[in-house]
View 1: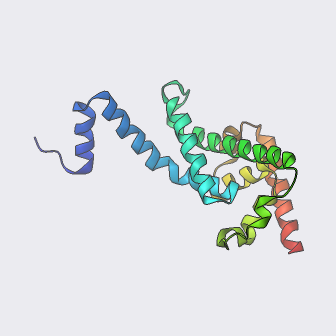
View 2: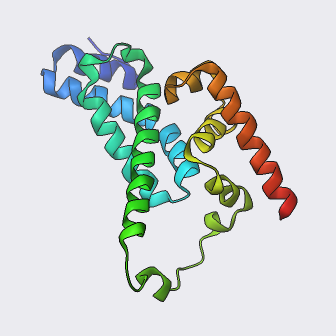
View 3: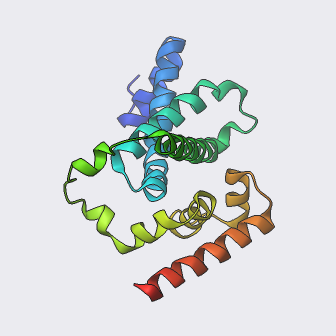
Length: 180
């Protein structure tokens, strides 16, 4: 019996391979399907590619570890996006604590960073000035094309809060562009 193409090989692997191999194939497929969108989301939230890659990887590991216990396994992308948003929020919260406790010389001010095209992009700079929840709502809506209901589910807030976050965030962006 000859199976045609990649789909046929994958089907064969799923039927005769040990459970560990099947799980690895499933995780690989989940990662390839959902990681690019999660990475775009993280980059828009943080403005830093390397940090975003770390956040997405950590979020993927955490969500994949709970794959068997998810209420809606088909909503893996939404769970992953929520985990990325939570990790980004935790990262920035930690950065604020670190900044508060620095007492003397800021070592970062002694080093001149290389020019980063992404950090000079006007929109990314304006987005980074927004509060985390407004930034997340705007990126999900206008960059990831998520509906208001999807945003509410991902961020864990009521629909009215999503509309408010979008409205206030867009107003701040417009205000920032008028000043520039």
